[in-house]
Length: 582
Image (cartoon, rainbow, N blue to C red):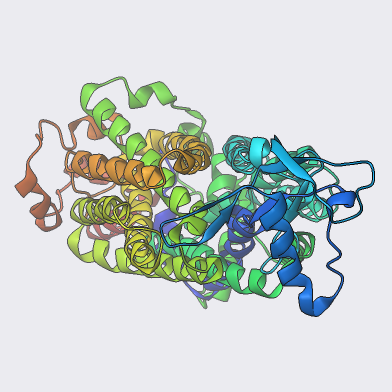
């Protein structure tokens, strides 16, 4: 017999004053997480560069009023160039002329060019927009030009590692201690990154920053502290605060143009979260799963007190129910193989994994490809954060009314179409506007797939299914920077890849069964039977939201209500309905 904590929350307040305070503070954790996830857009911003020349070939450009003209003259003489279709002179980034000088040559006397050579003594950079970046400081150009993209892939590999590490640690020692352990690690690594002396050190520390688990643990905590009807909202608002952080990053980066100072600025706000040590609770659900019922009882009474609910009796364990019987089911551990054991469950699982893979690929691909849109990078980053916010909020509104499947299909279809169409346009305002539509759509679909997946996985494998889904998302986020690099071979190629992937995922989403107004799946048998023998039916996407709720059998009601054996049959049925419907 299991303890259904949703039943208990229904008594003490599923989303009262206490939960609102805790959720509000944890939502803010997402803001610095966004800063570091997207920060390399500015830390490794690309700028124009050309070969430095030996001192004896340099002109004297010390006069400020003549400096720009002097530098242009030196580039014209020493750097190979071409003229593009618009008539603009394009200088080589990686070669310079080699000269034959006579023994009496003086500074600024070039002699006769005999050919071109690769930049042999370094590069000069256009510092008009960015005073320093990691590209400028570590010379990540020409033959080393792919290293910033590789560093971002290493960052996402760190996210993948952190998902496994902190997910396991928080299940082992608890949400609260794991949160503060990861906070110590991330604060140390983010500040240390500001002082690195090599690109290798920068990449290693970025991996450690990425493995921070505070965002994951905050997401788990807010969903475990509230009742079923509030989970979609509190989970969506974690993503909303991430998008707010995204938009704020562009404002911070606009004000701070040196990468070390910018890294420091986005690092220190994390230290504020150590104040949560004073009042952040452990998850009662985790405590119950570990048979720590007195501690769970204490926190639950605290929730009731702050929510203004008077409780006089024990809430966690019914006196008529042996404690061993109550907690027995929590020690039974399902495995990931349950997701693939039966055909219908296997089909849905693979479909969900692919959906997560595509959503993450396109989301980070568009975010990291901001500079290729042909508009000011600060404006593009702020706009991306704003449309992402609208995507999350709109999807939250839509899925509560039209279900999960139809909105997921439409958001993915719109995102795929926008990415594909934007590849036709040259970099500029038109491409940026269409890409914004794609970012809006993929943000909305990402939020939907979070909710949809939790409802499609049965209770015994829900955590495992969500963890594996996240793993596939991290794998694609590692690939995203590599796909962005492909633009050097054919500039629109990344957008075409993102668009095609979205279109395929949108069609496959039609094979998933609708979950709106359905009870959560409690057993693996429920998971196999739900949506079984449903083919690829386009018209079916309009039927799901209006499907009536299934009526549980009397035996099922009795089983689910076991924790409250003294309550009347009518009250039992009402309580079960609240605890099993999202």
